[in-house]
Length: 261
Length: 294
Image (tube, rainbow over all chains, first blue to last red; front, top):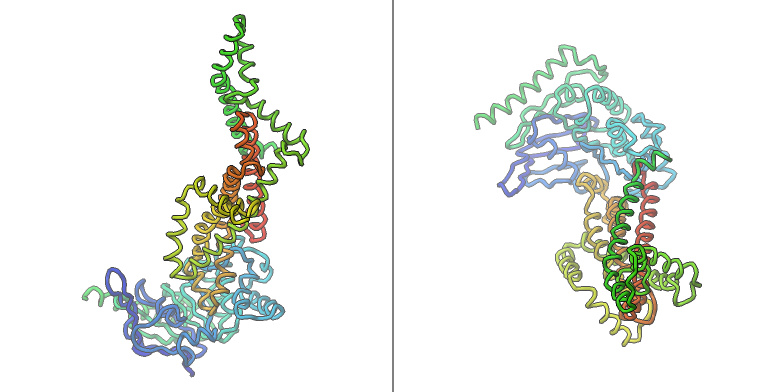
């Protein structure tokens, strides 16, 4: 299995007016090709920061990290990842089709190819027929699906998702989770997924990275034993609950450390 | 239709207008009374009635404050009943003022946008330009306008360009300030998104900053176009005989023609309103194209 992301002794310290904040400390981690890796932990544990370092949106202060075997900056220049933010961040003056076209325009794809790709990715996220709608005409869940389509449309092999469903209600979230698994199976992409929901992390992932705050660090890495085929009912099986239990234990361990420190 | 009338602001506006017109008529009686009384005194008229007196204060030839209907009659006479080519026509003077207003407004808007782009994209110009822009607006325009006109006249430049420059001077500022804010208005998330696409600064400008700044542009253009008109009128004051609402106002005050002053004022105010409305209409068209929720 080739490594898409590999971090060694990675650390990041923010220098703020209130003193230094160690957002990440000594993170060793490998994400293999085709894996679905979730990052879970309380706020301040550095899960989003790690994703932003992979995306070259933050610069690490210690250690090293390679994305596709090159530096994050080089990987960004090669447009080797798609990023889905917490909020859809659609441009309100563009309709859905034009929003999905945005990265293609920036990357200089021809109009005919753009049309083809837009059609294909909107189909993938079940938004066909909404091409001409403006973002405000769509529900929150549909907006987030459009933003996922936008991240998929230029065919990057790596998808970075930062709590993409965090603002949605549980019913929509369940639906989008199973959709995301289907999409992952269909596209064979590598996905790094930040969440603070234990069921979401266990349901989606092949690997769960448990993190804890002050300083942000990895406390446990769990390889999932769940089968690739995952109906929503799998969340009631003992196997699922066992993994969820281990995640919870990992989170608790991180907390007790904080209390003694 | 009736509902739109009831829920719109037509009725409140009409009520305020009626109140203002009443106050105006009362003020006209009060301000023109001394002159009317002195006429009666000189002519030894003693048997005047109050009704005659009031009507007389509303119809003097050179009143201190002309009554609304006198101004309306004068407006009608100098726009509709006078050929637009005549120097007595407010349409003729309006065109002179409008042409320099529009030229100055276009130049001011372009200059304002250019300055805003420089300020947003260049840290050095951010620190150096802004204080000068603010300082430029602390100079009283009434003081600087005649000098600009006179100096440019001496250099052989006269007519439209010097007046348009005064309009530019007044209109670039709101546009520059508004657009600095507008071009900086994208959310960090949207900027991060463009960064992940490895977008160039030019792409980020045209695809994100520029469309995102449209509401700011139109708001500042509405301020700018009104300021342009003020600039053109102020610039016409020293130009004297050359025409325009400014010249008309000045001539009126030379000869004590208060009716002429007031009608020129109203013509200028109407022109300003039409200009602001025009910018608003363009804004509406752009909004519709940009999918703004109606």
